[in-house]
Image: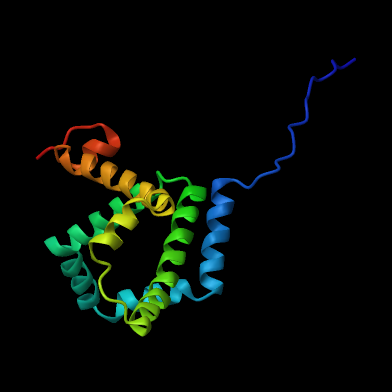
Length: 162
């Protein structure tokens, strides 16, 4: 009599393999015309590639790309709810500037003079409104007094080659 074979059924795959995902990506690019566009651009003229490479190889372009990268890295450190709060406050400030300017021109008030300035010094609402501005100026001033360092050092902790 024959011996019984020990066989376990392999589990059914639930995700695509890398090759299947790549095949699907290429097929989608083909169906939507991106592959044809890329092929036509490559076949059309080598000058297009040379122009792009020469444009990207300029110091000004490289500086611009690095600056954009720095802006995005800096924005990524700000929590979205705080940035939203700041942007809404900036919008409110921008919307309040024009009507206040128009009202001041229509009323034709002269400069407040010494008494007006002394009255403003005692205005509690004004000082409460200026406190966030003073805090921002203090933080900006402290940041400006720090020694400059290469962005790669600041964001990665690795020393720069320069």
